Image (tube, rainbow, N blue to C red):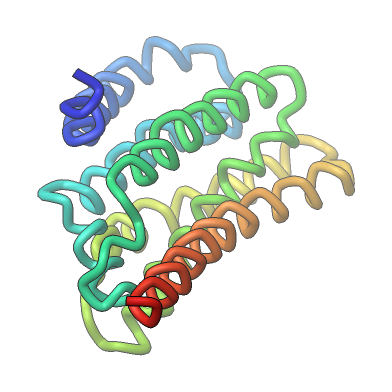
Length: 193
């Protein structure tokens, strides 16, 4: 059962995103605009994950680009990064933003960082990468608009800014370091054989 969940999580996420978007007008009734934009990070990220991971696109692209065909970002790691990590962090960010809106910058800055992770390589290589379309049409506008809305709606502490930037950058750097460590490990195995 876990194997099937790891292989198919993205489809449940896509359907959950559609449900959350349909329910947003009801759920967000009475919320300030900035909080609603923080909430929208959750379904927006799920839609992005669908573009990235449908048909195992991101897995294949990373393994081809960084692993030269070897599995340097296993499906299990992709599942753990996207479901327990991304979904739970976004849920925590929204819950924290209900008490102190400044914490919403974590999710919004993460959208912007992820957009750059897709856009910069696409410009450099002049090629599509899985997740690029939603990064451009969803992440950039929501990240910029939401960040501006939060900053205009509430005083944001220096700690909140630092944590938001650290999480946004740290998550992406962590994934790259993980993949690079797997590349080195597999190269070491290849030399030993």
